[in-house]
Amino acid sequence: MTRAPVVAITGATGHVGRAVLPLLDGGPLRLVVRDPRRAPRGTWPVAQASYGDREAAVAALTGVDVLFMVSGSESPDRLDQHRTFVDAAAAAGVRHVVYTSFLGAAPDATFTLARDHWATEEHLRASGMAFTFLRDSFYLDVLPEFGGEEGVIRGPAGDGRVAAVARADVARVAATVLADPEQHAGRTYDLTGPQALTLTEAARIITERTGRPTRYEEETVEEAYASRQSYGAPDWELDAWVSTYTAIAAGELATVTDTVERLTGTPPLSLADLLPRAPEIQARARGTVAAWDAEAGFGHVTLSTGLQLWCHFSNIDAPGYRALDVGEEVDVELESFEDQDGFSWRAVRVVRDPR
Ligand SMILES: NC(=O)c1ccc[n+]([C@@H]2O[C@H](COP(=O)([O-])OP(=O)(O)OC[C@H]3O[C@@H](n4cnc5c(N)ncnc54)[C@H](OP(=O)(O)O)[C@@H]3O)[C@@H](O)[C@H]2O)c1
Image (cartoon, rainbow, N blue to C red):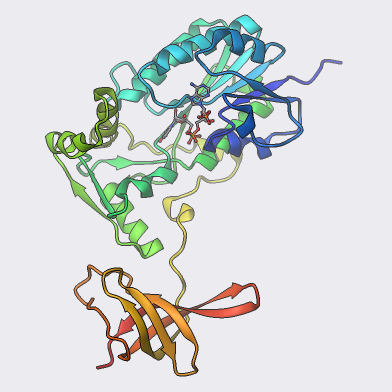
C-alpha cells in the first residue's frame, strides 16, 4: 500500500493559507510558517522557515510530497526569496508545488507584481518538480478597502473592468487541487469572480449593499503617483499601487472564467456576497433628541416609550444633514437585532425632521 502524500502549507498565518486548512481532506499535513507562535492551532506539526532562508526551508520541507506555496508579501527581493524557496523544495525532495500566481502573469504585464509571479512560475517550471499555478485575479475582499476611510476609490483605471476573485474561492480551488494533485499537474488555472466590474459599478455595489457611500474618481497616471507620494513608499511599491489601476484600464483583468465553478462545483462569490449588509429597516418611530454630536453626525434619541437609542445620519455630507438640537423631535428608522437578552431594537438613522 502506498502512503498518503504529506502536504505542506505555507502562508497559514495569512488569509488564503488559513482558509485552506479546514477544507483539506485529513491526510498528513505540515504547516511551514515564519513565526510558529502565530500558527493556527491544530494537531498538525509546524515547521519554521521564511522563503529566503534556504537551510531552514530544506529542513522544513524534508519529507513533504506536495507543497502549497502562497506567494510572499511584496518586497523588493520577493522574487529572490521565492527562487530560494523553490530551490529548497526541490532539494528537499518535494514532488509537486501548487503556487498562487497572478492572472495574466507575464514579463511585460502592466501590473508590475504580475511580472514577479511570472518569473516565479518560470523558476518552478525549470525546477523539475510538478507544478500547478493558481493565477488569481485581484482579491475581491480587498476591493472595498480601495476607497479607504473616505469612501473614494481613486486611480487611473478608466472604465476598465476587473473580475476580482474572493480569497475563499482561491482557497476552495487550492483544496480541490491538493486533494488530487496529480490530476492537476502542469495546469495553469485563471481564477476570477463571477463578474467583471468597472470601479464605478463596484463602488455602487459597495454603497448599496453596506449603506456606506463609496464612489470612483478617475485619476491620470501622473495624478495617481502624486496623490500617493505622501506615503513615502519606495518606487517599486508606488509602481505596484498605480499599476493595479492601469492594469484594469488596459483590460488585463477583465476576463471572467468558469474555473472556480468547474473545479469546485460551486459558483464563485460576488462582491455583494462578500459585503456586510446594511441594516434592514423594519420600522419608524418618533423620538426626541437626547444628545447629539454635530461633527460625528450621531447621538441618542429617546422614543415615546422612554427607550433611548443610539442613532446616526447615514451620510453627514449629504445635503439633508444638519446638527440636531437636544429636545428636538425627529423620526428615526429602526432595525431589530438579537442581543444577549433576546430580541431588541436599534435606531439606525434619523430620516426626517418633523419640524
Ligand atoms: N491577488 C491579489 O489581489 C493579492 C492581494 C494581496 C496579496 N496578494 C498575494 O497573495 C498572497 C496571499 O494573500 P493573503 O491575503 O493570504 O496574504 P496575507 O494575509 O498577507 O498572508 C501572507 C502569508 O504569507 C506569509 N509570508 C509572506 N512572506 C513570506 C516569506 N518571505 N516567507 C514565508 N512566508 C511568508 C505570511 O507570513 P507572516 O504571517 O509571517 O507574515 C502570511 O502567512 C500574498 O502574500 C500576496 O503575495 C494577492
